Structures are given as structure tokens and as C-alpha cells.
Amino acid sequence: MGPGHTCTGRTSEKFNGAHRGTAFAHREPALSHFTHRERIDSTIDKQNVHSSARHQFWAFLRKRAIVVVLGILVGVVLAIFTAPRLIDAEARSVLTTTTVNGWSTFMHMHVGEASNRILLRAACAKFIAAGNLQQEAMYWGAAMDSAGQPLNGGHDYLLHFPPGGLPPNQAFWSLTMVNPQGYLVDNPINRYNVGDRSGLVPNADGSIDIYIQQAAPAGHEANWLPSPYGDFKLALRVYQPGAAILNGAYHVSPVVEVH
Image (cartoon, rainbow, N blue to C red; front, side, top):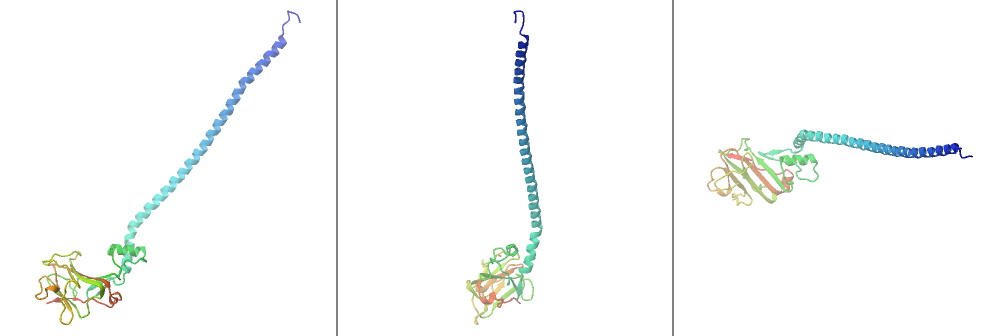
């Protein structure tokens, strides 16, 4: 090839080869960028899936929580309105009162027994809180005399226990004066009850009379239980009662008005 000739063919080949190499070099980063973008999109898709799952899970929990809370509220409302009625019904069916000679007592009430069902426990707590077992104590109350008239301080009364007729017990008994609300009443000698430990004086035949009146009974002051001016009630308590009380054979003597 002479000096005047040029290497156009080879130069062109070199140029084309260099151009192809340059173009490939430019295409390779673009491909790499496309692959990286796919990875980012895939990661975002996974995060979206996880986020959606978490959202559904918390939405499910919120719905469940709302149902539970509503159920609790409905239960509380029903309990508020129905529980008192159920307790009163239980009291009427079980806490029956026995009245003999004007004295009332719960002879067949199983107060304080561990086997009591929940409604009976609630009824006992509502009407006679902290009541003892019958084997521990028995209680009587009187608001009427033997004629069925209300006890009132304007009248004099006598409670007569025949010989051997005091309440049988293994501990003690007492007779307490209270007002219609169940509270002790003031009296000039500060005597609020009498019983087997108050020094009662028996009659010649062994019987015992308790004088229930405002004025002191002449010659019988030891057996005097002062009464107030208005209405009143009497409460008799016997601790560790005897078998005759527990089986219902014993009856307290009536309160008789003295004319």
C-alpha cells in the first residue's frame, strides 16, 4: 500500500469495534440499574403485604375487643337490674320467718354454712349480715305483745319464764331493749339488757319474771328492763343453743301486758 493510501477499512473496523464496546459499556449500567429497581419494587411489595397483614390482624383484634367490651357492659347492666330481684326471690323462698307467741325467728335458715349457693349467701349478706350458724347463736325478735298489739312504753309488760323454762344453752342468753330502728334506747339506770349474767332474782317456785316498763317495779328492780316512751322492740339472743331450740321444740314465752 502506498503512501497516498489510507487505512479506511481497518480504521472503520476499529472505530466500529470501539463504538460497540462503548455502547455495551453504556448498556451494562442501565441493566444493572433495572435489576436494582426490581429488587426495590419487590421489597416494597413485600412490605406492603406485611403491612396489609398487620392491618388486618389489628382490625380483627379491634373488632374482637369491641365485642368483648360490649358483652361486659351488657352483662353489667343485666346484673345491676336482675341481681337484686334474684336475691329477693331467694330470700323469700329460703329465709322464712317462724313466729310463735309473738316472737319471730329464722328457724330453718342455714346462715353461714359453707355449702350455701351464691344466691343464698347474697340473701344472707343483704338481710342479716354476719349471721352466725344456728349452732352458734339463735335470735328472736318481738314487736307485738300476746294480744297482737305493738309494744309501747305507755304500757307495762311482763315476760314470764316458768320453772326450767329459760332458754336452754351452753353459753349465755340475753334480752335487749331496742327502738323500732334496732338501736339501744336511753334509760335512767343505763340498763340495756338483762340475762343469765345480770343477777335476775327467781320467784319462790323457780320461775323468773322480767318487768318491761318505764317506771321501776317496786321490789323487783333487779328484774327490770326499762322501756322508752314510744314504740320499742325486744331482741332475745341465745348463744350455743340447746337441742330443744335447734329442733324447734322450745318456744319463748309471750310478752303480756300488765293492767
